[in-house]
Image (cartoon, rainbow, N blue to C red; front, side, top):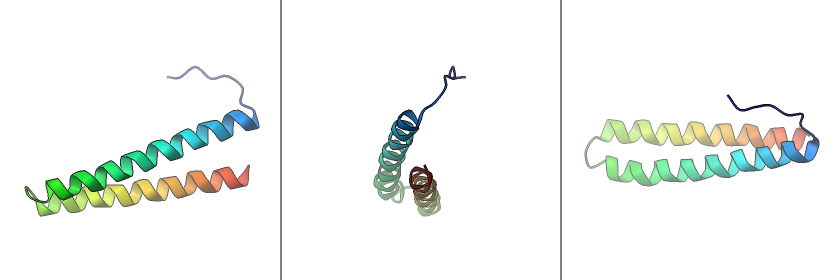
Length: 69
């Protein structure tokens, strides 16, 4: 578990920005790999594409959290 320290508004913004960038990177990677996976299993590729969509929804919530600060 990550050791917790008190957060201020700037550190929360930094954390949210990090998570948003991290999620965007993973989402793109999922989509890129799904194209390759499709050659092996169409269903597995659809599952990975759905994971990318869910990651995008997570990212949207993180962006909302940023606006709500």
